[in-house]
Length: 449
Image 1 (cartoon, rainbow, N blue to C red):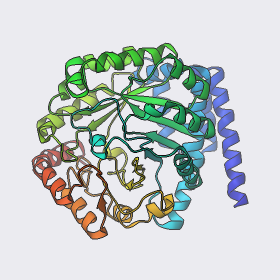
Image 2: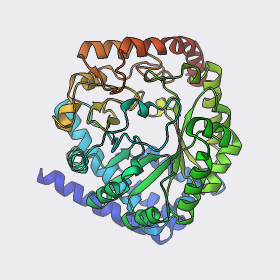
Image 3: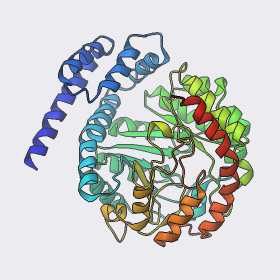
């Protein structure tokens, strides 16, 4: 144990020195640091990462180089804190601890934990899975603090708030940022509660990053989120940008808005307003209020795949399309493999979209939850499909989720209208059958040996 602690201390010291060196002259010192890394990485453990960074630095006209420069235009204190928490704590120290626990306990250990501080929200968006939980639940601040403490012991330093609207509990979230200054916190938010005072709090604690939900331009966005939501979201983005604070957007693409959110005009708007990243989520037909008509048609999903990957080569914006980019992370990342979800009632779920569980955090530890029957079924079953364009055990392989829930005796955590897994998976089956031949053809086209 002492040897591991000493190694962590040496790694932390070296990484901090490297970050400080880069800060003095980013454009000049990045290359010097890579030269140094080439000499000392005798085992070539980070060869791919070094190669990618070197390609960026050798092409200052590229979109990735421009994105790097945008990061270094952020508030200095916020940037330094983010880089230390993300690179040193979450990746270097955290990754080593996670791997040790995985080996010792033979279970998944996540890189990030998603939490619902509250189920309350000031909006009610069409097709929102969070609305299925009800609107009167809250995770106590002490409970969230205990989750984070247990998470850090497992190597988890990334915490992501969902909901509900997390910023309905601004003061509590800021308090947790202060208490756990070594962690990085991100929140999916509609942005309507971001104001000057909250921006000042973000500058003070330095480890909170919003991801503002945006479903396209005004017509598409407000049709789901209510009149005026688009303007309020953009106002929040411009306010964050004016304060040199990092933020991104979260977009759910559907059959109704996919053209908007994958257009060049939309990408350019995000960059102009200061967003550094955009996370794209496929609409999931979860809950009794699910709108099956919002599911994308196979040709629409293929177009989303092609457009986002195209802009990834030209726009200074980091994008992740969670349903179509599974090949980069080895398939489904839920079930604690890379993340898990704890709802506002304390139910520990494998995924934000899959509302079934065997355990509640009020009655067990995080490690106990990771070793519970449903989570172990994920551990033993991943990946759920050799075609990484069909990664999900619900949307693309509904028979897999159906079998896991029944075999483990997991219960529905939907508190308003508990949903039988047969009903949910039956709703997904037509989509899965329609997408499979298109996905298989696309996978063969893009992965020919």
